[in-house]
Amino acid sequence: MSDQAEVPVVPVPAFEPPYYVAVFTTVRTQDQSGYSETNARMEELVKDVPGFLGMDHAQTPGGLGITVGYFRDADALARWRSDAEHQAAQKRGRAEWYERYTLHVARVERSHGFTRA
Image 1: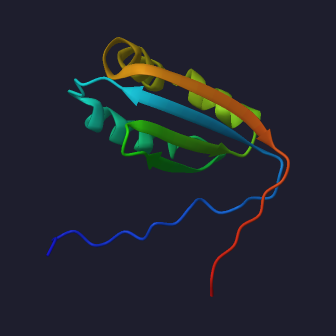
Image 2 (image 1 turned 45 degrees about the horizontal axis):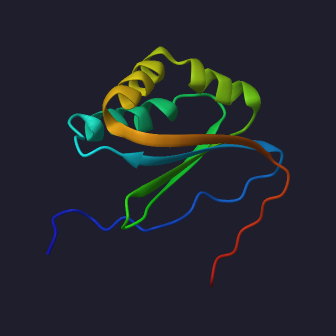
Image 3 (image 1 turned 135 degrees about the vertical axis):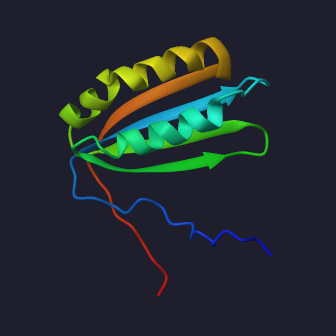
């Protein structure tokens, strides 16, 4: 039995639109030295951005990774994009950790959720 508490798998809730999403889809390289630490730091850092709403992650068995960041407005997304530590991590990602990636940014016009009772 693991010493770590089970963390429930829960998607980021639906928010009142409009808001913004940044969908980051990746295929990583074999050498992931330092990736986990940098990724954990980015997850902590983005939480301090005013207007950050949350983040979802998924990874396929074949290696496709998807991260969706949710932001209240375009200004919040711009603050994250222009963060110096985030920019340094992006540069290192292109140099070392990513075989390829795509980034899609969209304004959400409709949002709803469901939870089984």
